[in-house]
Figure 1 (cartoon, one colour):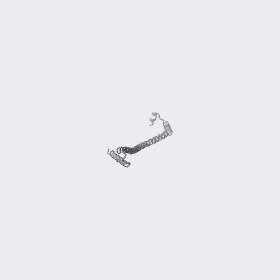
Figure 2 (cartoon, one colour):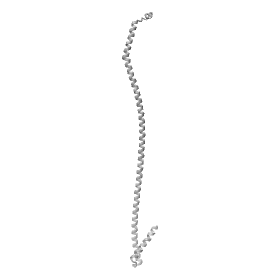
Figure 3 (tube, helix red, strand yellow):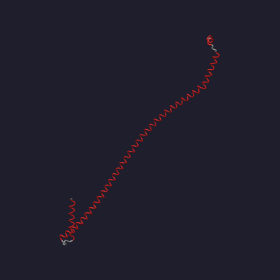
Figure 4 (cartoon, helix red, strand yellow):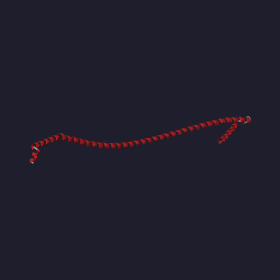
Length: 171
């Protein structure tokens, strides 16, 4: 071994000094470089793990929000359909009420018209009776002269009017 050391010119003191220097440099690197680097890497690893965990939570929250939104949309659609249904029902009720009101108004107008027709008919019948009575009296007066008394004349006029009424009702 001595031959080997002499052949390669290895000085054991220099080798020992280089080993000590290596250990000192390794200690300094460990203390000032590797330890802070390891701490930074650990912090970064924790941040990444925390970020992944937060991302998963956010993804779950987004899914929950989407489910809630879909439920609310369905609920809103159902409420809208109910409102439309109620509005249609109310419109139909209003329509029916207006039709009923219009029908009642038309019936009332028809009844008023019938009443007016009855009144005018009675008035016309009375006018015809009076006129016919006058004509019958005049005719009787001319035919019979003045020999018929007023009671008999009135009775004849009433009979003529009654016969005229019967004839009118048949037609």
